[in-house]
Length: 484
Image 1 (cartoon, helix red, strand yellow):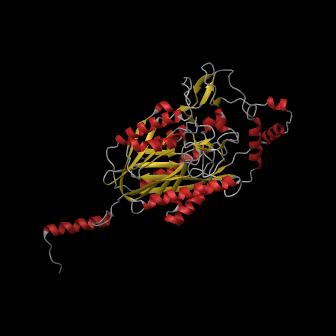
Image 2 (cartoon, helix red, strand yellow):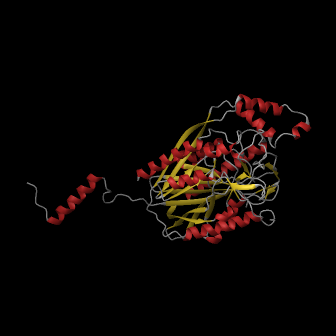
């Protein structure tokens, strides 16, 4: 016969049995306790000259105006460990991304599908390089790859108890949609001899400009990390601004992304080990040109400094708005690879392109639309491409009630705004140029308007790719939201 327990003991037993049957954490179960580490490693080229892409002509650099870096943030909740590395480069090839993730896994044990790599998209830095080709490209590929791995390893080794928070502050006056409807009769022919509805970076003239073809995103989002003594460890910021430009000719530069990182310690913390980083948001159609106004002349790098100072101030305000930093947050990350069909030119388009490339008379070449030869070559290359589809990596990250979407494209602003609006999380950051570089990502509606970002040879994949990517990311976010 079982002994009769006192009333209080009976109640405690019933509570314990109820917790066990409901799946609630029993006494002694571990609650999440966040740890974080950050690091920055110099990846400036060691030898010059190097070529800086980002246009249609050669752009050699004979030195560096300011350093390039790989900046890493590693987070762990005791169950999941995630790494995010921001690299001062125009874009990261899929080959470089895969090599870097494999090397980080070998060194730190971090799974490749828990690593997010993204480029700032500065236009005054060398490409990520390859393991074959010109000697300087091969040499720089090693510098960049080693720097990415070293930054992640140092951040991983620096893991310590930490707390995080998220804030947002607007900076609307430095972002402008660069695609414009023009007044009747003002649209020049595109490289294919046709007329688009909108033009990228048109003449800044009120007699020419009608209205912008899309929105802007004014917000700077800040993910702030500090240790348990409230000492700042890192700031991860995000702004939907393509880049600033106006850097010294012939010099490598990290553009405003690097200047922001240099300035933030003066706003937040000058202590050793503090790392600030700025990521590129959904800015495929956004730049820093103030259309319909006249900006005074600037010396080289001056506008970069101006934008970086304003961004650092906005980031300071965003961080200051955070009510509390928390360490009891669960981490989650989802990665999916999807296939997007490559665009193919029609037989008529190929024939027209080959006709352009067959012209040898300089006088006849002068009559062609601007960039006609460039896009004729791209059209032929698109027709001859052996692969049918591009396999692209999408990632969604959860840090408590904060989410990140990582997209390997130059993502149009309205796509980012749509993801933020429809996300199941209160705050969502959109990072472009992540885990690869696959060209522009316009919406189907923007495709119908035409313009540089939609041209065959600039936009490589199917015209409804943004719809497929948005739907996939929203499903990933919903799964992460449901998981905890």
